[in-house]
Length: 94
Image 1 (cartoon, rainbow, N blue to C red):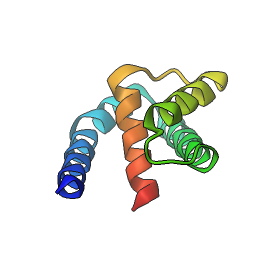
Image 2 (image 1 turned 135 degrees about the horizontal axis):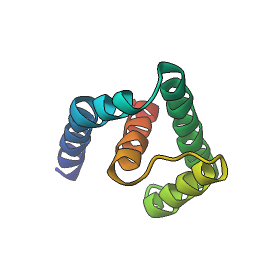
Image 3 (image 1 turned 180 degrees about the vertical axis):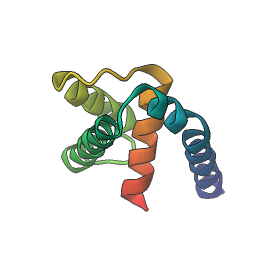
Image 4 (image 1 turned 135 degrees about the vertical axis):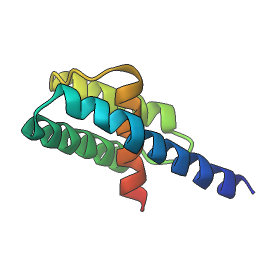
């Protein structure tokens, strides 16, 4: 049952990313900047998943991703960053 709820939640987050976050990011960046940003986030998420083992380590993985991006001077914050990270996690797992 929890698995079904989790999949539904992931689908809703993906829908929000597609409908709100991506258009917002597109309005503030060039195509090249968006590609670079998404590549950096994908790399950070993959590194966190590879480095930190365990499904119960979500917060630790999130902090790893945020720190990794901060070290590279990525300037996306708050809900936009969280949505892009969630999208990368979803893509990685599917």
